[in-house]
Amino acid sequence: MPLRFTKQDHDRVAASIARAENGTSGEIYAVFARTSADVTPISYAVALALCILSAFVTAVLGALAGHAVAAVDLAFGQIVGACLLLALLRFVPRLRRLFVPGFLARMAAARVAREQFLAHNLHSTAGRTGVLLFLSEAEHYAEVIADDGIAARVPPEAWTDIVDTLIRAGRDDSLADGFVEAIAAAGALLAQHFPQDDAGLNEIPDRLVEI
Figure 1: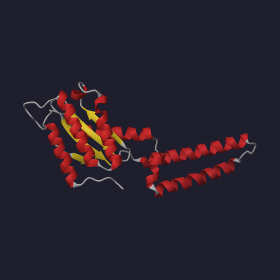
Figure 2 (figure 1 turned 90 degrees about the horizontal axis):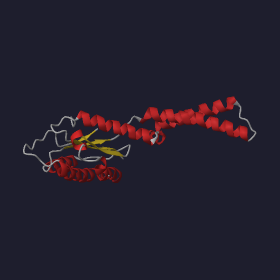
Figure 3 (figure 1 turned 180 degrees about the horizontal axis):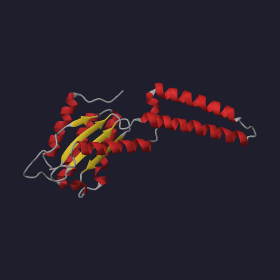
Figure 4 (figure 1 turned 180 degrees about the vertical axis):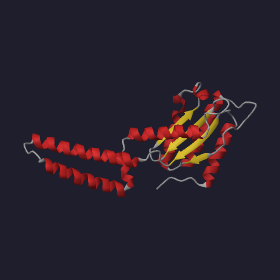
């Protein structure tokens, strides 16, 4: 069942961002993605590749055992197997992700995270202090992207616990709690390096976006 945010959850997350930004000049933004990749073409391609590979393995094993398999039999089996497998993927969508290599899913999620960072102008703050907290449900992927101003002072490993918090929230279906916890931790970390300045500007809306 897809994970959900209620209106109250959105309000909680927005309030947690406002609280976190009270102590820092950093700008925090949260994005939750249901999925980051269209797995249909990838899963079909991998399924077809497996059918081809299985035919090759069958031919080799048959030859080694002294029972050569006729080419026409291999081709027929390959066609039938491919049709059955593609039909299964067509009518049972949740199985498609089983045929998508993990690294491709992570690459897709990372790409979407960067697109969201730019789409919400987190690269355009006056002090280059935008921070994106991103979680993609289907890929079980989370990332914190910090703009150049923050990255110059805060090393990537400093965000590890926050990323773990987001991944755990997705796994345990505690999205709002996880984002609130992650935002509070991000705010505390930012306050160490980027305390609130006199201007106290709020350049980016305090909100969670679902895509």
